[in-house]
Figure 1 (cartoon, one colour):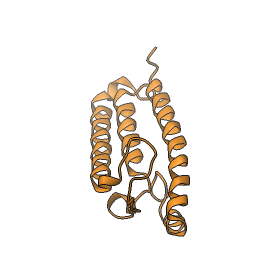
Figure 2 (tube, helix red, strand yellow):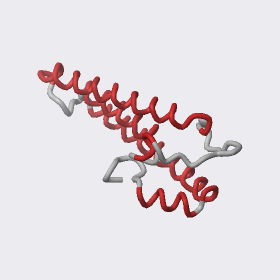
Figure 3 (cartoon, one colour):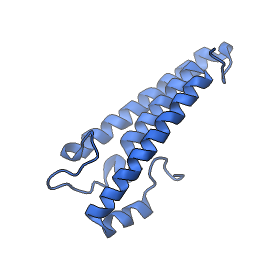
Figure 4 (cartoon, one colour):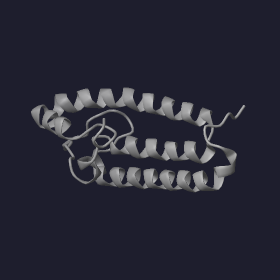
Length: 130
């Protein structure tokens, strides 16, 4: 139990790095949530007078709340240094991927070519990669 992908001797270094990543991820998530404002919902739904937000953290990735949470979970995995933390991160990433696919379809239905243009310009979760 607790097989590690990082050695125990480096815990102080990796613990600090992990906590920094966790904090950065949470800050990014909060920035995205605040920037999204009244358009935010815990359930996949459109609000009345829903707007397409493409500024702030939404210039960097299309789903910055998920990006921030994944960065925070990655920080926890690095701080713990255990493989089971990586498994948890993968499970969270898969669940966010499934949810964002539903959100993407809804956004295309609502905003059409404007969202398609945005989607071609901005990656979903990882800037410049994916």
